[in-house]
Length: 315
Image (cartoon, rainbow, N blue to C red):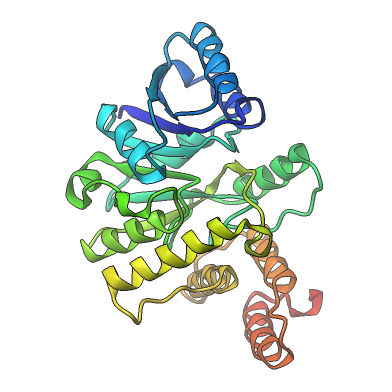
């Protein structure tokens, strides 16, 4: 199975693309991957850094766009240039610990293979987010790897996947088509693609044994006005494409759905990883709604799930 990795670059090379590439290069499988860096018309400083990176990583292909075409279009350019059976779309603000890419793509090579697979991470707006309490990157990675290593190669159903890192089979790409470039600079193009995959009858899952560190972005309240406007615009575009009643579940609901899936497995006599469940319950506790009434109802659900795992006394 040939693997292609598409990394979209835009400025901040030292802070993002450089450590991302370094983490990939430290993996024993690095030489077997097809890696494409698509740069969205970064500034002169970043372009200079990219030229240096070409010499350090001669096997990596660099595609330099003359203008910033946006997240969806930039990824489409990389996908079109790739040749792999599985294409991984990888944000430049990620770090991939050794062996995690192999674990992620292994889920694409199983019976009843999913069309799209996402890893767990320290920063995501959906069910992929796990509880990490460390204040530094190394600590978050250590905690994430403990989660990934605390159980079997479990894959759980996802409502949607965040495209900070996603593995998509070539068959799925051919069936679903390119990312919708109307989403412009970004936001919700991954939500749209997840919904399109599900409409096409394809499976999307989380690889609970694969952790990728994600630097993530600032909170919505701290975003510039133009970014907040773009978010609202693209959310409306989702409604226009998929119906006014499309659901936009909070990340806490995604986490609850993961716990519910583990509870179902336990009910059917399957072994469930205690550490992962405890981690998810702690994340649920840390992510309570602000309003007292919503918080009361939410915590009733959390405690009910905790009881199913015999963990209520620990909460």
